[in-house]
Length: 249
Ligand code: BTN
Image (cartoon, rainbow, N blue to C red; front, side, top):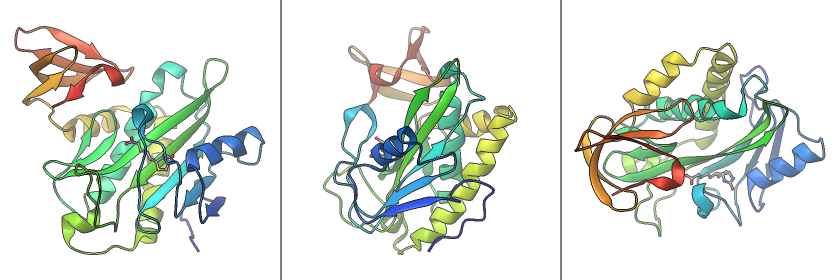
């Protein structure tokens, strides 16, 4: 069904009509040594799709893309795992921006429309080896043709554009882009990707409202190597936040 124009990513595709979570299937396949680097697990329906922070990932059967990439980024130390988030989220942002305008990357790695809600998300789960990432499962959920959402902060490419899309075309182009970025990362070329990430980061260098232990006004001024968000507060102080420590208001 899907012919990928890639070197290794998607050469082996496990396509399931239904599963709990493609990330979980990928994890099982890695553990039973049935999945090597480049394997993709994709499904039309997840019964227990997982989002960041223990959230549920909802996606209407057949309409969208829900899949997981099996990668083996042994060239990354555990403390560099955020680099993979950058490489993948910018690949998604770059591709989807060819179809609709106004997309941003919301830290750490949501793909959102600047005013109309969330289009996609990434959940990366790692198997840590000796001083390196033995395996990374990069789970990607993209809302393509779904029109109605119970969650009011979610949207899709179809809603944003008014058109339906060929999701397999998007899938193919996307894994090609992700592979290119992954290989760049492997060569150690993160700098340009990091710059792209910042340039397209939601609320970067804008005063906005956030919450930590209380609500405050601040400005995102960067992202640390370890992925922590750097927010400057009105009093000039710089604060570093891990994923669960700060919210956007
Ligand atoms: C988020 O934004 O919270 C991350 C969403 C990640 C969803 C994808 S869908 C395919 C893969 N399998 C899962 O269970 N989750 C990821």
